[in-house]
Structure formats: structure tokens, C-alpha cells
Image (cartoon, rainbow, N blue to C red; front, side):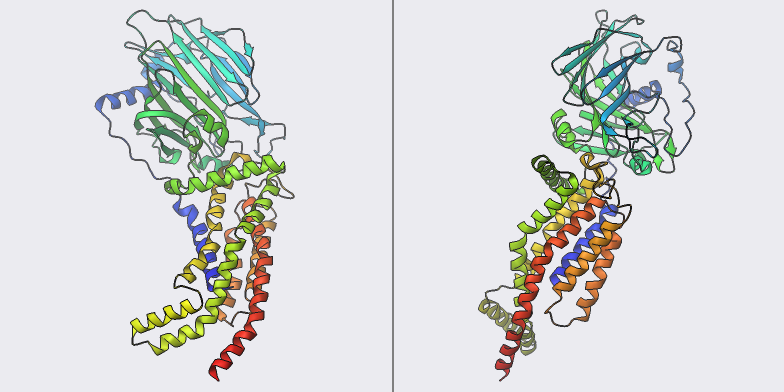
Length: 570
């Protein structure tokens, strides 16, 4: 293995080691607030009292103490709870009155991976007692919390692929109606609201509160908890991420501006609310952390403030997986709700998007599992890079043959740098090379690095690979439980290095690196996703024929080089 190959592998190792340390989302700077915004944030949190949610490793938290404003609301214990089920192709909503909001969202296409869960247990997005969202109407004189209002469900209607379910208030002095329109081919529910009020008493704001957290349905609940975050988009493309761990339990964080959508996510699933109609932007997002565990905050109190210009409002609510296609069709930039690469998101995301689209296309085109898709993808990448690697390796062989003459020129003109440079340029031209040949020869070996880099994030966060099994591996997005793939990857790298050393001049440093690099990469990849190890191992195996052919060519030309050197000496 030549020095350029070792350099490429070393740079790859540095990138992989630095990835978990460097690519963390930075703390977002908070917008300066006016006095009115501070008052609004204080009032919003005073009204809000979501149901506490237990963390993954702690008992249920005690009920939150109601504020003075909450004690003035009518008691809801005496109101009879009613549940209306709305089923679509992708989700089952359990809409509960009082409130007429979903208390449960189940996704039949995704099974729970929690320890002890059966294969028939589907993913549920909400913890018991929580809501998908909570609505409050703020007027000039009072606030109506829809959680305290009893609704009567109307007849359920189906028109093609759209299921419509309407609700009408029965206990509020102010007539309120909510209508859900759920499309069978998406995870989006459109919510249209109407408030009947006297002239001059229309509601001025709609407060939309998010669930305390998205329920974790993963085998590693701690890892899922570390991914909990609020994400929102302002302006044209500015997507900002606020991790639960960056929120304070005493001081509320208030983000202001024209907020196009707000989302809460964990590792694989997301709940997003997108205003539509005449009032298409939230004015502020108020957040603070709730209960905590050893993994950090496990709950949040988060409310988005939507100004109202009429007595109606419209929301699009996405509750489902972080599927690139579905998110992209729901709202602009929503596919970036889980930003890859943290502060290097703009550099990493394009590669991750391209790689993911290729994997999805291959999955649909070849109609095979993702394990075989990774094998095919690894072989195709190596075949596409074959000509570039061929030129790079042959340039490396030329450089090796030129090393004695270059050393002689450096020794001869060591006191005259200008003549030394001219002589080296002349030597390069005689052999059809340039001073940039060593650098350009290294580039083809570094080209697979962005793909490997993108796959690191794809396997960490992509819902399409969640729970996908292949051979003995139960989940390609998790580490290999038998550690066969990292070991096979390390062995294949050693064989590749051993073949690459054939015909090269003896080099103790190169020989040592041929042993050290495979061991180092095996340790690095030990706990990485088994799919990533599979892809990299396939890359190594697919490179073996080319490495063997070039090594044989190097061995064949070595005697000719030795004869030429003797003739020159004679």
C-alpha cells in the first residue's frame, strides 16, 4: 500500500473519529424580546400545564401544580370523555373529547422495537395521558382552553382517499367547531377551526401546544431521548434546531419571527404543525424543559403563538415517520427537520440526500432488501471509481520509479533551489507528469469519503432503515450483535493492504501501517451501524481485483526498472 493510500485511510479515520465530537447542533442565539413579547411568553407558560411524562428510566413525575389562572377554569373531571377513532391507510387517530384533539396516534406500518414488545405492537407517538396538540383561543378578555370544552362528534365521511370528521362544542358559551380531514396516502391531518363570537370579540391568537415528548419505541431508549428536539423554520430556508438538553426548566426560551412551521422530533418520528390559510406564520415559539432523567430532559413545555385575523384558523398537522418523501410534500424544508451534520449541515446534507435518494431508487427498482441494496451500491461505487483509481495507482507507480532520480536532483542542486525546481519540472515533463501528480493521485482514493461520511448520518437517522434485518443482523441501523461485519471489514482491509504492498520497495513504516490501519478501523467501526460496516466491507472486497492486477503489473515492471537502473549506471 503506497503513501497516498495510507494518507487517504488516515484522513478517513480522522473524519470518522471527529464526527461524533464536532457535528453537534450549536445553541441558537435567542432573538431579543420586546416587553410585550416577554409578557406574552409569561402568560403563555402560566396557562400551559401539560400532562407530565415519565422519562425512560424514572417513575412518573408528580402532577404539575395548577397556576392561579388554571384554577379559574371549569373542572373537567365531571365531563364524560368520549373517543372517536379515525382510520387512514397510514395512521389511526383516537380523538378525545373534551378537547376534540388526538390522545393517541398509532402507525400500523411501524412496529415497536422496545424490549419485550411483540411483533404485533405498533408504534404509538404519544405517551398515555398526552395529546398530539392542545389548542387555546386568546381573546381580549379571556382565554378558552379547548381541553375544558366538551365536543360532540358528527358523522364520519369518506370521499375517495379523504376521511372527514367534524366536532361541535356543546358546553362552551362560545360555539366552536373543529373539522379533521385526513388523507389516506399521507401522514397529514388538516384541522380547520371556526369560532362563533359576538361582533368585536373575535379571538386574537391561537396557542398551539405540543406533546410533552414523542414516545420512544426504540430498543435503545436512551439514544432516542438524546435526539429529542424542537425544530422550526423562519424565513425562506432557515431551519433551526433546539435540543431538549439546551432548554432550561426555569427560564423559558422564546424564539420570534415569521415561523413557517414548528416540529418536535425524536430519532425517527416527528410531529409538525404548519399554519395555512390567511394566518400562515406563527409569531413566536415559547419552550422550556420539563422532567429530566440521567439521559437529560425527557419532556418539554412548548407552545407556538399564531395571530388570528378572522374567526377561523387552519393547521396542517404531520404525525409520522421522518420519511424524506412525505416530509418534502408536506411543507417546504420540512425534510430537513432532522439536520444532518449539526453546524456543517449545509455541507453534509446534499451528500446525505443524494445517497438516500439513490438507496430508495435502487430499493424500488431492483425490488430487494436494503442489505442487498448496500451490497449493490458498494460494488457500483467501486466500479464507477475504477478508472480514476487505475490512473491514480499507475501515477503512484511512476512516482516510485522516479524517486531515485528526484533524490539525485535534490542532492545535486541542494544549494540552488531554482535549478533544482527546473530540473524536477523537466523530469516530470519527460515522463508525462506534473508536480501536482502526487496530489491528484490521492484524490480518487478520497472520493468515496463523502459517501461514507453521508452514510454515517443516513444510518443514524433514516426511518427507511429502522428495524430492517439482513441475514444475522436484526437491524441495519444498529451495531452488529455478533460483531461479524466490523471484523470482516477489518480483515478485508488487511488483505487489501497486503496485496497493495506486493512489488513495493521494502518500507518498515508502510508495513507497520498495513497492520495498524485495519486494527484501528475495526475498533472505530466496532459499534457503528451494521449496515455501514457491510457497505465498507463490500467496498474493500470489490477493490481486491483492481489491487491485485496493479500489484502484478508492479511486480512485472520491477525487474525492467532494475535493468534500466544498471544500464544507466554503466
